[in-house]
Length: 160
Image (cartoon, rainbow, N blue to C red; front, top):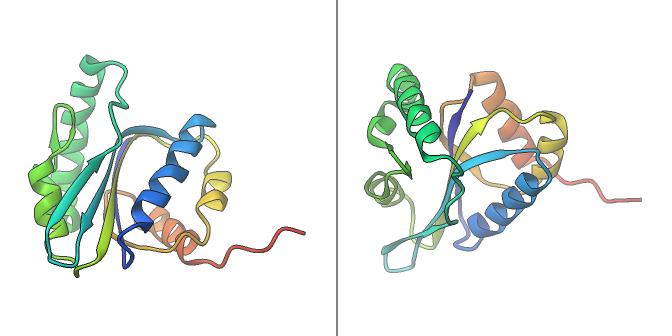
């Protein structure tokens, strides 16, 4: 099952740091990313989007996936504002700019669209532990959202 997650950060550089961590997790086959975008709202209020590049290998398969995910989001009342969030190639830029415009200046947001669940969710959550941020929107279940937010908010334990 695919999911859309939006995480906000009070630091304009933090979303990029987390994006790099997610890319590492994908390289280790712990995530299957369809689209990742870093949005930064500068001190003047201007919004800039930084796309991670083409993460999609098979456009035809992804277009079918987008239809399924769009239906999922439309059915999720909490994510009703995301109804226009998807296009045939990823997350819609207009949607992201409007969403980030509501954030405070000098902040950032990370938009993540995954294609399938993590094969090792516990290890993935451990890798995300202590990165900070607040989940602003998601199509995850309430339980999975709570686990992800707990990992992001947790203090990373020091290695022995």
